[in-house]
Image (cartoon, rainbow, N blue to C red; front, side, top):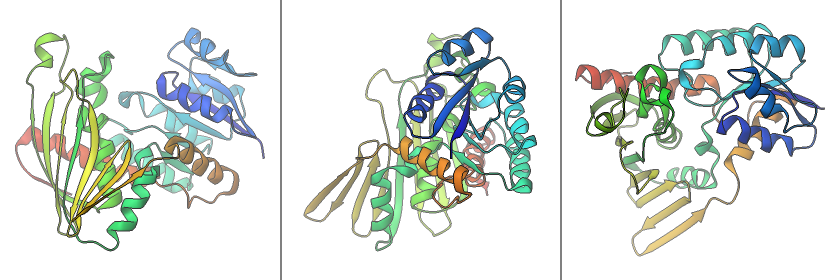
Length: 322
């Protein structure tokens, strides 16, 4: 079965997905939507037979598509998903799924009503190290976890505004929150403290906090802390350390390090998690079998709620129960 795919968004994520998809047998990337026609045309020129469009509606009116990839900033969601829901077109959407709770909740209801196939780009779930960590945790007692996303502030203007990105915990650190949910369990309570230490003094228009620490209670009784900063010029890192009765599991982009008494074992990520994510979604589009998709929209919504609860807790100074 030949699958025709459209890409909404021509930034790094959109083009990364397009290039990976174009290498697959039976997959044809035939349409690109950008914020203007010129950007869309430039993206489309790189793929045989593809066309550029300045709106989702124009693309859907002109092309018969089997699936669409949504790779847009957090504030730009809504119209795209609604158009795809109206036409029953499966979609893979990059995280986060919005900047508030109301819009994703509405989209989720439409997805559930139509039983539409969806996937959300939490690619950490597809890492080899994550698979191994989940296997090991079946035989261990999780005590607590420490997560982190430490880096510099992205250069795009929308990221620096709460209304554009939702802030670092919603836009970036959501990956670590999702990894915590996937490996340890559901979050039941959140307490957050954020600060504006530096970035608003050197850059204009910054309304996002540049440091934050979030304490989380989990359903199984364990606790976690996830911290982030977007103010450091060097030393970038992201990951999750899970402390158990046998030692520590350190999960990150590299894979997994299992530290036990007298032993340290490393499990490198050997496969591309983005490719596995694509294979799972495309298999579902072809067959209707969604069992390989590790983050549906409904699942991603639960992660999104945790990150929004952190924002609310930081704003009010109060713990938020979920």
